[in-house]
Image 1 (tube, rainbow, N blue to C red):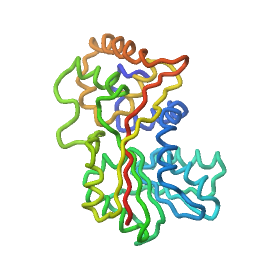
Image 2 (image 1 turned 90 degrees about the vertical axis):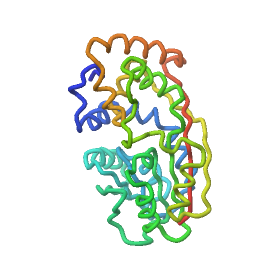
Image 3 (image 1 turned 180 degrees about the vertical axis):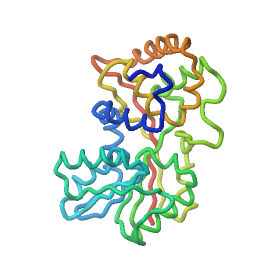
Image 4 (image 1 turned 60 degrees about the horizontal axis):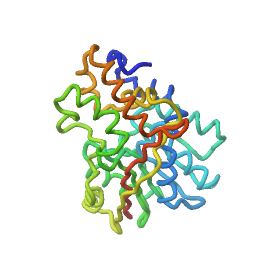
Length: 277
């Protein structure tokens, strides 16, 4: 599956990429997953809601922590990605993990149902953050925490060696104005402000540098980044076939600077924030 073929970037491509890269993608995000799990402080018997769960993390890790009397409900708009999540949970024999296709802006749950909520790299993509956060607060019990992981600045190695390389060749807008923006909450305090504005209290936020390690080749990193970077798709589709070889060569050279042994070790600046309902 090569990033040099724009015809492959259909609505199903994220699913194809998720299936192809699931082991290495899980390894890439493992430190962020573990960070939000520890940050959320799950307790046995808790009912947990994991928003924008995709292929299942951190929900699956949380299900292992809350025990058989607890439960995790994984929510995503993509039923196909949730199918992968459900399969992963079955493989781990987790009977307390369920999936629910739903929109974060209109959750199909009763008021005050959950003891904890998590969202790993999803809050940036809510089209109406205030509405989605208020809806999340509705389904949380009073005093329950909602915990989020969001991308820090684009000025960090993973993005600079992938999407920035493409942008240097094609110019124009990197992200569509008014469209999805992975870096929407990268400015210090911006996610905290959104939580407070949506009625959460005891809000806290910090930015951490966490491992972001790909167990493989530089070419794989670039292919993976292009495959899953949906907000950048309009930019990627502007790349002419004759431009790809130079872009790929430059990206590979840039990524290789972060190689340590058999791994590409970028590190990632990640915003962790939480508030209580």
